[in-house]
Image (cartoon, rainbow, N blue to C red):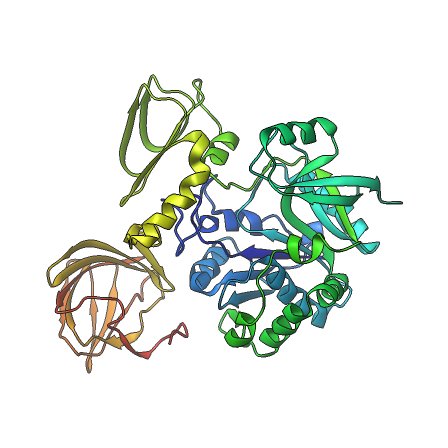
Length: 471
């Protein structure tokens, strides 16, 4: 079987304001009802020859990822948490080391969690060709047949065919993002392909090449995995060891320096969804070339991407624009300049705008909360607790809280008391009192919380018990 390895890192800058560092694009439903991570995890059914996936994830996103996988019924072989980001080469090394303990001759399919693939039949056919090449001793990358002279992607140049492997070729070079004239020449030649960042490796060969080319990286990854601890659904890498690993991509660390590189060209409706313009390119459009999503009205407007996750967006007489509105931010840009959004986010971070990295709705392992109002010594939140979930047993030094149940049933610990409240009932949590909120019911619990006190920050929490291993 082929072992999928799904890489779920990312900083969430290129699709701001919907994507943020605390909720990057792979966790968003941008192309349908499911998130990009869910769409990726669904590509690998067991009856198509795939093992359960290994997922390498940012520790900060662990509960959201675990919940999204549960929603689609995917049970990963492992959900491995990176304490710090070190790019794709160390992440793939961690997965290879783990798989080598179970199946030394395993093949692993390494791919990002935030790409779109429309033609799954073409993808699986390419995977079979890549598996044949990998079994013959090659490190295989997937090259996307270019649809246009794209300057936003790197390219792979192919050489001679791999003997005995139909549809696989030796790699003669990796090329950085070209200028327009060079990109046109590449596409016209027929020998260059977009670099997809998808790979199929024999585990043993990848580890051998990493050890030859970047021994310090492999040593750090091996130590990080040996020092890992299992916590509920997660495998937590040793932070000190993993932080000691150099950070580098698979391309730079291995593929550009190995003699074993091969490419399998494929046309599969692929996009890395690296900009709002890329989303416009692949989405269905109206008669005037517009992509309209959410609460949007467009009049005499053409070739625009207009999306609202909150109030109404109304456009009149505009062309070639991207407008994306969330409940706390609006981004407007020419379609051909959406690659520059990450520059804008860098400025927002430098100027300490909260909107740069956090969404108004904050996800927790038990549910979500959303701030409705922040004022002098007061904050109002909407809390949603999933069925069967409970918050930690906790207290606050600087604030008291009033809770009003608006839907569902709440089981509440307040000091030495325990009570059950239903809709339209309320309680008061005095400053310094141990308390806990739980949803014992079968529907989501919705609570309005009014905080009052001298300090209302999220770090004013002392936890005594927690079901989710949070320190």
